[in-house]
Every structure is written in structure tokens, then in C-alpha cells.
Image (cartoon, rainbow, N blue to C red; front, side, top):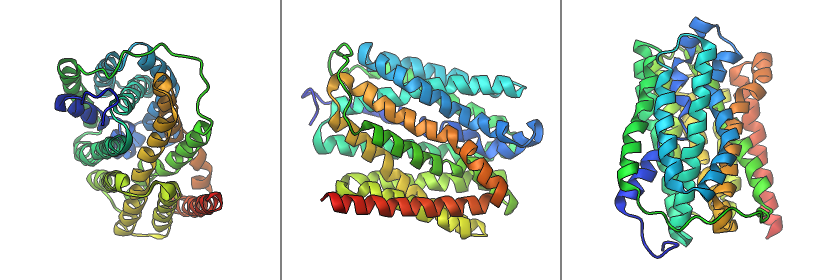
Length: 375
């Protein structure tokens, strides 16, 4: 059932789902290039920031994008963001200094914030009830599918030249053309933004999204170096890191069929168990197995939190409420290498995964107990 009684066209749905593939893994496309970039610019936090500065820009821009989505409309925001995404993303191929590269990555982040916010707002405008949950699951599945497709390609391209993966961002230009031609279904005249209070549960949801993403983003920021030390080539790094997104697809597709009460606790616990396996694994297959388990958990997290926020928010403030989730997710991505760096320097990458996995597993158990007490 749609909110307006008029179902979006199949072309419109295709635009939204294709746009979703460009979002979650936008920053991670260059993950297989990090070791080679480290040789050019020096290994350190700044090189890792070439990946995560995008996430900070998304976190900052998402609330503004939410306001634009509510006041101007979903389609104008989406088209503008897709064009910016294509230009800023491919620009990384041409630059030859780290500061300029960080600038283009920042602009890319601004674009991703607009894409994610407009996509989530369109979906929650179009659908209600079970259909909303199903399509939010599809959104996350396609977002993860983007990693499954783009990361192995990035790994292959990085094996030839570390700059080549930047050309993958040009896909957004084709989607922008499709959006201009086929995205005609605005669900309703967008209401003027109000000053009504946000639902009380939003802050807790935002914090949970931030924390879970901070832990999960150890995969693209830390694992390339661990896998290299285990003998992995750039192509292997791309395939292995993509494994977490493959099981994220599975988690997102299963999400609509699961009872909603305990999904939050289960998803956090699965992420923790996966990271524990990585921490104690000393071979590429064991590391891959841990990624698959953790990725399944993350595949449940995002549609679950999206659904909770969409059901709690009024239509007039939905863009802004959902943009807060986008900000939380990508602030967690940005903070991940900064927060984890002291642990990595003290104990090593593998031990860092072990300790964060233990803490996350305990957090999942606490959430399960809290849910039990509440009921």
C-alpha cells in the first residue's frame, strides 16, 4: 500500500534502488587502493582519511539535505546529488596531491548525503506498513549490493593502477539521466518544514547507528592492511571486503520476514561475533568468515532503524528525521579509524578486532536483556 494510493512506476523504483547502490560503499570503493596510496603519500591516518573524510562530509551535509528534501522536494535533491557524485568521484583520478584529493572526497560526501536522504524519504513516502519494511529492506540490500559489485571491480582496477577505481563513480551520471527522465512520481506536495519536536527515540537510534557503523567500518579501513600482511593482493582485498556487503544483502532481504522486537540485539551480537572471529583468525579464510557473519548483522541494522524512524516521524519532518540516521551512520564511518587507531597502535589490527568484537557482543546481550525486561 502506498501513502498516496498511487504506486510509483517501475522506472521510479529502479532509479531509487540504483541510487542506493551508490551510497553505503561510496567511500570504500578506494579501500583496495589504500596500501598503494600509503606508498605514495606515506602510511598513516591521513591516507585512511582519504576514505573516511567522505563520511564526515555526509554526516555534516545530511541534516541540510533533509531540510532541502522536505522544503524543495525529493527529485531535485536526488538529481543534483547524483551529478555532483559523478563529478567529485571521478575527479580523484586526476588529482596528484593528498590535500586536493581530500577536497574532492569531501565534495563526494556532500553528494552522498543528498542521495541517501532523498532515497529514504521517497521510499517512506511511497509505502506504508509491511510494504514499507519490505522496500526499506530492498534499499539496504541494493546499498550492500553496490559493495558486492564495486569493491571487487575496484580491487581488480587497483591492481593495475591505484587511481583507476575512481572511474567507478561515473556510474552516477547514467543514473542521474534516468532519474531526470523517469522519476516523475513525487508522493505528495512537500509540506513546509515545521518546528514540531522529533520523536523522543531518535537520539538513541542515531547513537546506535553511529556505534554499529564505527565498529563495522573497521572492515574497509583496517582490513586491507591486515589482509596484505596475510599475503593478500589488491584483488583479494577487494573480494574479501566485499564479502561483508554480500551477507549484508542477505540480512537486508531477510529483515522484512523477521519479528521486529529483537532484531536490534541480534544484529549487534552478530556483528560482535564476526569481529571476534576476525580477531582470532590468522588466515584469509577465517577473516573472510568473520566478515560474512558481521556483514549479515549489519544488513539487519540499517533497515530496522530506518523503519523505526519512518514509523515514528510525521510526513512533514520525515526527510529531516531520516537524515539524522544518515548523519549517525557516516559520522561512525569517519570516527572509526580515529577511535580505533590507539588500539591498533597498542595491540595490533587483529587484537583490535578481537576487543571490539567482545565489546560489541556484550552490547548485543545487554540489548537483548533490556528488551526482555521491557516486555
